[in-house]
Length: 285
Ligand code: MF3
Ligand code: CO
Ligand code: CO
Image 1: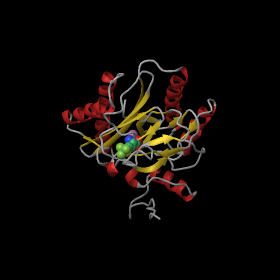
Image 2: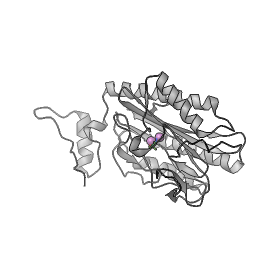
Image 3: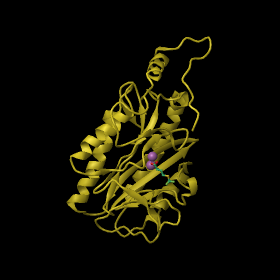
Image 4: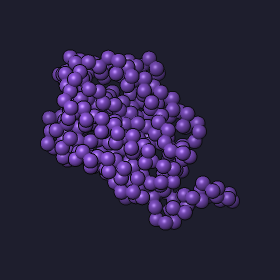
């Protein structure tokens, strides 16, 4: 088990009101952020700059994505945009991931690997998930693209998945809890009978690719880590048309690609968010 670093004041220094609020919740047995999870203004500016490039990458993909294109071409677009902007694709060689971006088509939930054989067809829905490293800072976002015209069912899935992200963003309040996010998402998702993936979660981000806290998309109000201004994290709900259950595709030699158990389609949207005094600010618009 990992050692828990406790929130404590510096010797000889009075705790600020901010510190006291955190210490109060810790004394109530709540999970509270360690100091490294509360970003300094300088770190926030760094993550913001990574966010701008990350948005540029996804905009470049949006401008070129079309039926007949293969997902390796999407990888090339992302790679060259990064090169031109003096940035690094975080996914490349991350824990054995072989490409620069995740391209997840239809029943692929996430971590789809770009390949020449995967040619986009009319009616496909695809998630493109990119993470930028700029001057050591990370920003992570993903969008869905509908290739040409798709079915009303898939169109609704893509729309509701986006609404889940937006509703999760609204539910994230300073001095609230991470569980408030998944609670709100679950409520919205229930109306459609969709499955919310439980095996993968949003995450703290900024100084590393994946930091604490874990941001579950199916959760309970008041649970999880205390949300404090200065924290940076993602919300990235994966919404399945059928069952929430997923597995790793046995055909993927890298062991990365996640697929729905019933092979029905899945959709996901993701933003990197800064918690402020008022609510979240999107760093990846
Ligand atoms: N970008 C994904 C996330 O949202 C992580 C992808 S890891 C990779 O957390 F190795 F598959 F790229
Ligand atoms: Co991502
Ligand atoms: Co992420």
